[in-house]
Length: 237
Ligand SMILES: *Cc1c(COP(=O)(O)O)cnc(C)c1O
Image (cartoon, rainbow, N blue to C red; front, top):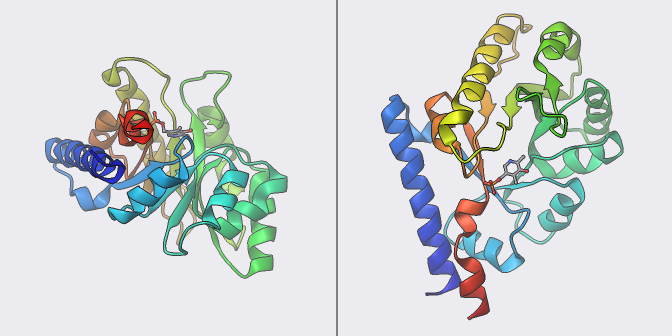
């Protein structure tokens, strides 16, 4: 089997599982965006993925995102899903369609300044650490509820929703309460949003747990390994 055929097959299987999860939840699959996470993917794998029609790609390091954005057509939408430091805000603003990983209030003025200087508006999600794991990034839930009202007022930053990563387990169902909590937090924060701010995005769910995430309201799922299954063997042959 060719590399492209294998990737097409993986992509179709993931899309089918997304559609089935939408079916169970009474949701329209068009309301769930698949972000193909390319952080461990070789360039040829990404080319193959683009050739079968996928254009939403996610990277977790700003430098790699910028380097890869330069290699591919401008029609590709790049999503920054990993930690961002203020001194890399320019890379995020220039290359990312959506920054999923704003984990501190201090990033917002940095993004605003960069976006203003390039004449753009940067779209962001606020990352929330609901699992409480030390190594995870993100606002604490209490912290976000306490500071949310102070996060607005950056004219070149558009806050469009929330993102989380569930604690890693072998059982996707174990992640469901975390996803539900993110949705409920979003619903509460939405009531406090200034006019014009709509938290319509929920970025939650990865290869191991995207189905419960969709059932709980995910609008963006970030999927890497499920798309790249079996490719090492194909690439070597
Ligand atoms: C790597 C990564 C993913 C994708 O993980 P898979 O388990 O390979 O699907 C999703 N979100 C973030 C933030 C990541 O760093």
